Image 1 (tube, helix red, strand yellow):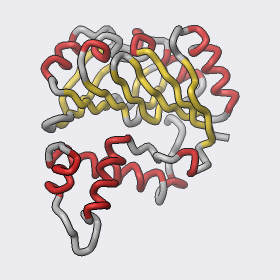
Image 2 (image 1 turned 180 degrees about the vertical axis):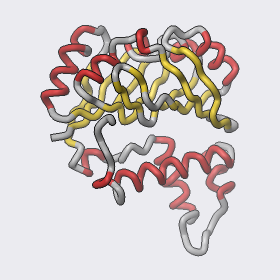
Image 3 (image 1 turned 135 degrees about the vertical axis):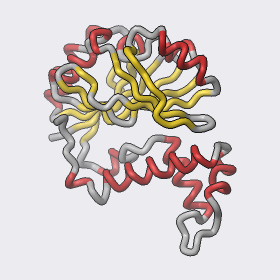
Length: 221
């Protein structure tokens, strides 16, 4: 039975071991699939007050091959990163048990990673191969995917949740609409474009994990 594991992973054992600890900001991987030791969906959102410093750190980071800015907002940017898969054996450990990283959020040199496994046996194998052999890596929580009350976030990040909640409370989803997108952005203290992006990504995650939940391919292709 499919289960979700939540892990704390030092950046040096995963990705951005140099950049994540040297730049003030949060990096969010909303979905990462590993196939044959290679990252299939290498997109990350980065929230920082200094993109120039972050990109400079990326250029010197041992886990990064190439990168490009896909979408830029005032306080958040989307990057496409080509990872150097030889830099960490986490990819091999995940691929070995056919696990998928649902999302990961990194800050101050540490990642909080949520991964999906086919069953508890796969988690145990991953724990033996990776967690037990890397200092600072630990399993914080394990629960079933099929239980909506424990799954909770439906792959919605905290920032997306805050944006969706603020928009609903302000009447942005009401008919007729009771506030503007700019009103929601002002409430969150972010730009209009950033608010729009968070709402769109949050809504996509909610629909994909509720209304369309039964039709999603939850295993790496």
